[in-house]
Structure formats: C-alpha cells, structure tokens
Length: 433
Ligand SMILES: [Zn+2]
Image (cartoon, rainbow, N blue to C red; front, side, top):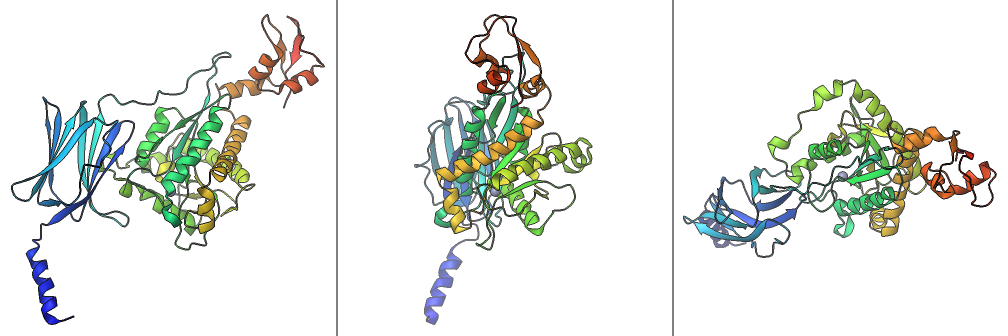
C-alpha cells in the first residue's frame, strides 16, 4: 500500500467526528404486554423521551447520531404504534416520532455492548391493559379439586436468540417448538394444566419468568434449553437444578454462567435486575423445594435416557438465576447441544421435538402421580384407590373410570362386570392401575 493511500485513509478518518455514532439497524418485538423497539448502535448515545397527547405520540430524541437504518420494514400490525418516522434535528440529532393508537407506558434505556450484542437503545411500550393470560389454577369438576399447574419456560426469545448452531439454527426457536409440544401433551392430561411463560418470539427477564410462574401459582417450573459449547463434539441431554453452594461440575458452572448472561443479551434494564438471592437461599423452604426439584429432575432424566444420549447420568446443579424460586420446584432441561451438527439436526426435526417433549412429559407426570400436591384432583384420585364407590343415579361405568382416572377395563375386571349394566347402590372397588 502506497504512502499517499495511507494518508488518504487517515484523512477520511479525521473527517469523521468522534461523535459519529450510527444507528445501523432497528428491530421490533411484540410481547403479550409490551412492544419493544431496539436501535442497534455503533457506540453509546444520550437520549430523551417525550410523551405527547392529542394526537397520542411519543418522541424519542437521540443526540449526535446518524440514521443508517430504515424503520419502514417494521411490522407494526398488532402493536399500539400506528406509524413511525425519523428525521434530523439541529444538524446531527435524530428524532423518532411514533404515532400511537392506544395509550402506552413507555420506558427507554441504553444497553452497553457485551460479548454477544453491541450497544443498543431500547424503547419498551407497555400496553395500558395488558392481555394477561388468564390466571390459571382453575378448579375442575369432581368436588372442586384443582389442577396441577406446570409452568413451561421456553428459554431466551426476542433480542436473545440463545445459542446458534449450524445453518443458523437458533436455540430460541427450537426450545419454543419443544415447549409447544409439551404444552399440548399436558393440556390433554386430566388433572394437569400447563401454562406457557413465553408464547412467542420476545424476551422476558429471568426474574420476570419466575414472577410469571408465581403469579400463575405453578406447582413446577420447567425451563427448556438447547445450548452450545466451545467444542462442537459436546453432545447429550441433561437436567439441572439450582445449587446453593457452587456447581457440581465445571460444565454446569459454565452453562449457568452462559444462561445467566441471557439478561444482558435479552436487554434488561437495571430496575429488572435480580436482588433476591442472599435472603432467599437462606430460606428453609428452599431446602425442600430443591429436594423435590432434584427428585423430579431425576424422573425426567430417566425418561430422556430412553430417547437421547445423556450428557451426565444425574441431575446437575449450578447457580441458574431462572431456577431461583424459593417455593416452586424448578428444573432446567438441556435437550441437547445445538452446536453439535448431528444433535442440531435432530433438535430441528418435528419428530424429535415431539419425542423430547414426550420424555419430559412422562417424567413430570410420573413424579406428580406419585407425589401430587394436596388439594389437587390427582391427589384426590390417588386417595380413592382401594376405596369403595357407591353407584348413584346417572352414573356410568366409563364416567366413573374417568373420574377416578382408572382404565375402564381394570374397573370392570376388578369388580367382575362384563357388560355395561350397573345399579344404583351397587358398590365398586376402585382398582390400583
Ligand atoms: Zn439456553
């Protein structure tokens, strides 16, 4: 390279003022209770938010920045934003105007670059009336016994793609697919009621995920992941629980550290950060919650053993922030390594996603049928085993079998009934299955 050429480059660099930060991309995510707009930047910026009425709009002023991206392609449908435009103010300041069709509570913050994402300016618009998923814990018929509530947490989402495998396969998509399959299986189970912590492509903070599980009165929190490792040979499924003192292996510690960085990538403002820890861990209730998490996790692991290679043969423990609910048994299922070419291929196939969901489902179901929380339909059904039931008017054999969750054939065999005929006042023994 000739000397003049170098001087020419230096000249261009000198002509670029130090404040020349650029917006190089704008992205939008729609969550059930808010809309997030992210401005990707080449450096830090100062900004100001102005909320105006009649017509309702939000003005975002960003100092000393050049707009190198377009907002035209953003999908505004289904969001409170009706239109969005940008313009230059005072020579080098950017003004973004959002016209709103509904009242929102805005919140904006700057996120410093980290290992996985660059500098970002985040604008969250909270809908005034969030379409909160109706709180579950609905009672069911048969003496008003409640369902067992399983909170299914598909890891990552939105801003945070999670681990990325060959062919740009993203953890956030794979785990949402598996979570949906698990949701469908549990929905078909009498006495169980699943609830999805994340139901689309948006980010929820780690603390936010725990809060949702508590709001929905979950009996179990299961977080689903498919992570990556430096060595692409790493493979196998595993199950994790929280550790209150150190990790059970370096791999577990590494994974927990990666998972806990999710908030950095996902974009969590300081006010959402976690402050619970110390007190919570000293809590005595944590001991029994953790004990249950480990035992339940083991059931899930045993079921996964039948369809996948296990990474470790026992439930591992580390300081996962998402598992830190003091009162809800919580496990993190690592369905495999998306960084491993063969496993990534499997994890992206519908049939394997279903297989994986079936294994997780079987483990959860097996645990709760053996240890149903009190007050649940499943606990009540378990108590009825070996009990006598006196047939009342309007009863049918199949109705009784369903009510006590026993196979109709078992009920008939145990009571020596061959046809369908039963009589009011007749006594039936509810068999063990
Ligand atoms: Zn993950």
